Length: 203
Image (cartoon, rainbow, N blue to C red):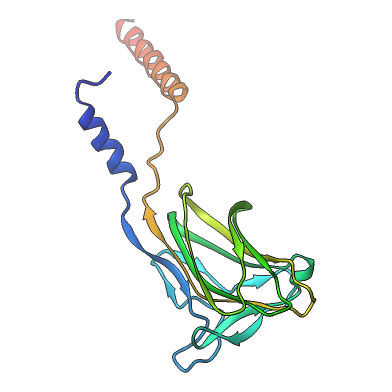
């Protein structure tokens, strides 16, 4: 055991310390002239993300909170609104915020999955309601977020989201450490070469 535990803690902390706490990405779904746009309004350096998609190909523009919002329908058969993002460094998401509203015949419930893992769920509202979700995820470089709606009473029932924001930190990639077996093997090779050199020098 180390006689200097504070030193070990300092070294470990330096390897995983966040280098940037920020909004990783945000979507307002409108331009400065209130035109609809399905692209990030904010994007942290090193993060890549494009347009949202949906499983049934029904994405459209709706009145937002304010401006425009992203909407879809066909939630009677399990439609999902999906976003994929990646980064040059590992991302450690800590919170998601978004506004959501369903039509009278739209989904009654919503759920969020990240990389296929269930994260949160709740009830939709027929007027814009704000959702804040704290996250506890491991740092990764690639994420797929899926917002799903269920319980719609009609195929034309709609659900819209606006002001989507993913917050968190970017953390440095861990320094690769050779496995013990690799270190042992390399040490044995060095010793063998060293012994051969000594035999040659004595010959």
